[in-house]
Amino acid sequence: MRGLRLTRPRRLILEAVRDTDVHPTAAFVYRRVRRRLPRVSLATVYRNLRVLAAEGVLAERADAGGLRFDGNAEPHDHFTCIGCGRIHDVPVRRGRAVRARLAAQTGFEVLNHRTEYFGRCGDCRRQGGRPSPKGQRRS
Image (cartoon, rainbow, N blue to C red):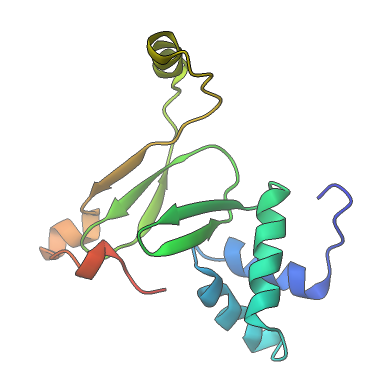
């Protein structure tokens, strides 16, 4: 974290995101951090999540449920289960050919892209899970 002070709240926030694979919302992180730092505010948590994301320590991703944070800042794609709403990291498909084709067709300079997959995870398939409202699990 190039020159970014790792204060106690910031460290606890970072740990809360990295210690889960649910791609948490700021509210989820706030509830976790508050267990160890009762006087922390939601605004402090949100501001620090945004700072950590801007520094590349965390990744931000928007979905239908709002803004979520990802402890895995390396390039990767996501699979969202429409049964339980859980978001899984999946290896990124190298898309040089896709980016080059899009650039040739449109004139865009494509710097990055991401792919989102939707379906049923193995657990939901085994349980015959039905889609949850809005396909989202509460975090």
